[in-house]
Length: 313
Image 1 (cartoon, rainbow, N blue to C red):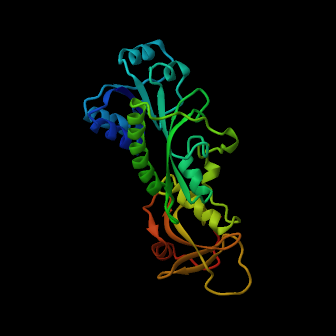
Image 2: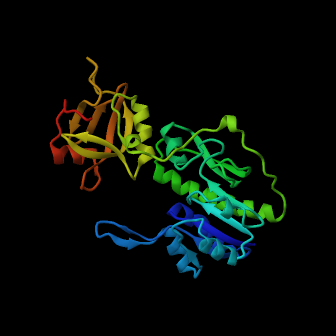
Image 3: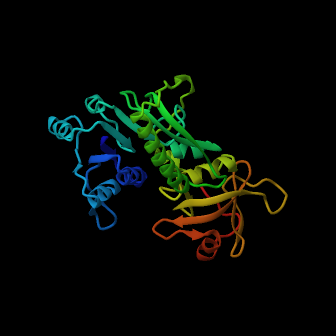
């Protein structure tokens, strides 16, 4: 089977490497994002998928637009039987319908749950205990195509986005291989999604990243792990922006009048930082002040001489 692979981030690379290692597959080309400046020096950076493709001598296309006659002609010349999409932007119908075997997507949720750009983050935000990966046939409406195969994956109680993403990338790569094998043997029957069960996972906004201390501690905890290690959940301390990278829900060290949301209850060089939420309490175990390296809660107390009663907003 001749395949063109569409993808950009590291999540995509796991599937691409799996396909490249499979001698039954012929990866005739890769389509990925444009090179762009990155980092403090604004050096030109290539996508992880492009790096992988060049490493294996696979031709690469980086179109600014996906509807131009020039791009469509180049794509047609590759003569692929199937397009595989893993974490890429929305494709026009002229691309989706080009290969005879169709265009297959690997999505990091159990569709129709969490359709959209950020399925892993929203599953964590909502405190889900399970998620998974799904392969499906792409059609014009985003993430609505018929399902080919799905694999459930349990979510660890303190697992972060970065940790879960790595596991789902591996699960997705394995499911993709299984899907292509079964397609070739005509052993997979596409099944429609139940639109009534669909939930959304839109792109994360700046507002989604902001810690709201009046929320329940469990909700804040899930928001923090859904944003870790990057881009991080944002709070403010002494008018300074900080990222909360890890925390855990805990019990107050004493009884008495309920503190205000965002109030520091404990600031101890050995015990760390304990902050009140709208309901419940959070032990801030990893914090990153703006422009600084990540540090433990105890390091933060020592470095900033944090005192009980100080507020987070």
